[in-house]
Image (cartoon, rainbow, N blue to C red; front, side, top):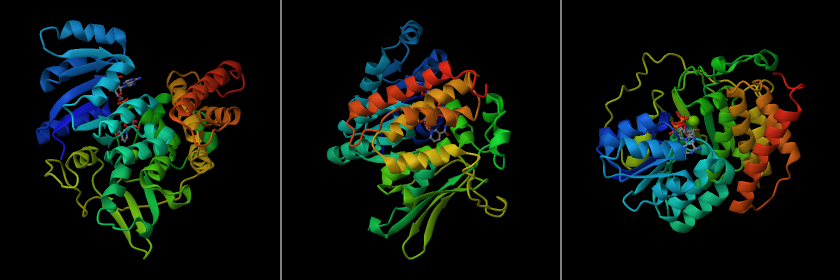
Length: 390
Ligand code: NDP
Ligand code: MG
């Protein structure tokens, strides 16, 4: 059971909910990190008394130093700051709740220190899942998923003694705000429309990923890496109510699922208490009032990101890192209103067409694929402006 955490990404949606669970379970906090939200970081530092507070932005770190100069807290910045937080000896668990591939190197650093990883940052496993899992095996570090679907699978696998008995993982997917829309209708979607998620309140990047269904694509790859299964054994079904959080199908036909209200605090809490469970003060699921549970096949014509992600999962090598880097860059451009909603998948496909996949990649190859993918998206945004659906 977790006693002391380093929380990477404390000011975000997962970060703030993690701190609620920290309060509830009476855990200690060794380090907190954020990018630029200084005011919230100051508040968190004053409440949780970490030894180290990191602002990725140098400017924000300077401001934080001034704001908390009455406290005995070290303030650091940049990638070195994140790495320091990931390796801090006082922490037994590192929560990776930063957004994007910036989480990769700190996660590897924490694994090498044999920390329990409470993993929310799915981009890390998408880019470098095979490498990360191999390093976790080598170092004997536990990776416990926080992503609700992967936590549901993790919970449904408890008691399974032979992984060969698992025939399929089925990830559920809310379908996002545009369920039932055609590709043509999606052409005119604006950021403010896409930022409205029906069931979950999350950071901007993952909310857009949920609207394009890239989130489910990333999660299919995350599941392949965590549970070491080929893409053919990982499916996604649309389940609008977000009550069944995912399922494991066994070879005798049994399907084991985890159900609950849509609340990230449950998987966060479980990542800290596993293999035990703690009492929760939150509202429990009421089967008599939760309504009908429905399941549909995803529409791959309208939402090509899901198809692209499956193809990259099959290709392997650096394909997933290219896809992920391009998607991060394309989503940011969409949020800045520099490109259209359907251009996200076009830009990702464009990057995949331009960059050669490397097989058996080392960390350097993955970081280079990520960089090249971002560059390819920026180039396409520059040169294709007239042709894109702006
Ligand atoms: P948010 O955008 O809400 O929070 C991101 C956090 O990371 C913030 O603390 C932010 O700091 C920090 N951050 C952003 N950019 C950088 C950077 N370049 N360097 C260092 N820190 C940075 O994201 P979410 O909490 O929604 O998501 C976090 C991760 O968890 C993602 O990988 C997401 O896919 C995954 N996840 C999220 C779920 C959710 O319900 N939100 C569910 C399942 C998975 P600042 O606030 O200062 O910008
Ligand atoms: Mg999820």
